[in-house]
Image 1 (cartoon, helix red, strand yellow):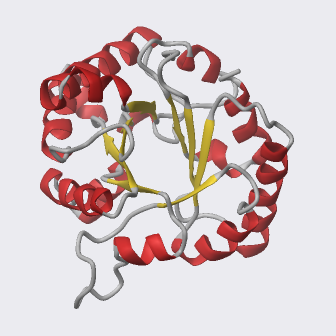
Image 2: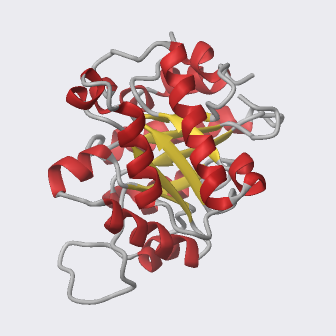
Image 3: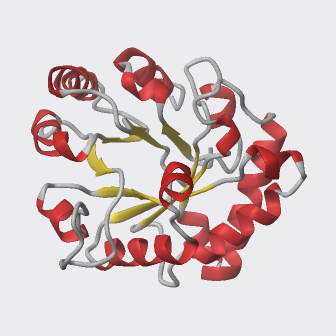
Length: 254
């Protein structure tokens, strides 16, 4: 982690957790956060759309931010089943994940579509968590850096900055598998991302944007990953569903 960038610990609950468990999880995290007034990290939880209002209420008096897992690029219209950025803003969301590998793979989302979503969020003052990452086949073929560069440059709006943009590097082959790249491999990818951000946006904006690691970060490996120079936090899946594990990862920032 860089001393110039405040770590962000983001929980992606995906399509998990019903109301009772979600409120319990959010309530425990909120109490923990209230008890740590000198926290050196930021925290955001991203539940399913059905829980946004109630989880938002549960964390309202804490320093935990509310996030969503996806959005449409348009403000309104004939888009059955979609949710607009303005709807998420109205529900109290500050962050929105876009371009997650599961959206890219399962729903055919493209770099251009992710860029449009991110731009719509930024226009409202929300922060887009833009996800990028290579598949196992691409990793095995030695194409990681090429894929990361292509996805980043294709998904990043031109006026991105630290206040409205977070990048999440999520090697697809490491998500939910318990596998992780070596620390050297993670740092190499994150350094590439920082370099590409600098080329696209300039040195000052690039140095301020947080780049998260998002592939099976756990209480066991978080401290080593977070110690890397260009890892500024984590986008956490499985370990975000247990308050004890998620909080332990956050404490690795201390």
